[in-house]
Each structure stands twice: as structure tokens, then as C-alpha cells.
Length: 96
Image (tube, rainbow, N blue to C red; front, side, top):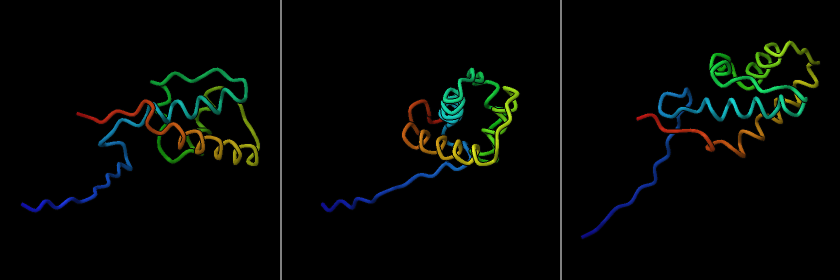
């Protein structure tokens, strides 16, 4: 008997297969913590998701009534993405 194996790769670009929101929340709150800011509750962050890392951070900063320069936001986006990539599946769960 011959068995064929095949590799499979799954992409979930819009959060329909896996609940990625908790890790996105954690990434945003990590960046806020580097600025000495209180975290934004996860249920609030869920409503901020959409438009990419830059937009999530802008919304989180606005929620905390903080404005920063575009240059500082550029660095924060880099920090967000780096932290998220290191912790991408810490809290993510596959939807049933």
C-alpha cells in the first residue's frame, strides 16, 4: 500500500476561521504599556480591529486620549508587528 502525504497551509486573513482578536489586543496593549498607558479592555479593542496595525494603534491611542507624531507611530507600528509575530498564537483559538 502506498501512502501519499501532502503539505497543507491554512490562511485566515479576516478572522473567520480563528479568533485572532485576543492576540491583536495583546499586541496593542503591549505598545501602549511601553508608553506608560493603561491597557484598553479586550471588548473595546475588538471594535478597533480593522484597517491594519497602524489603524488599531491610532484607535487605541485615541481611546487613551493620546496623540503622537507620525514618526513615533511608525516606530510603534514596527513594535506592534514585531511583538505580534513573536506572540501570534498565544491567545488565538480556532472557531468551532
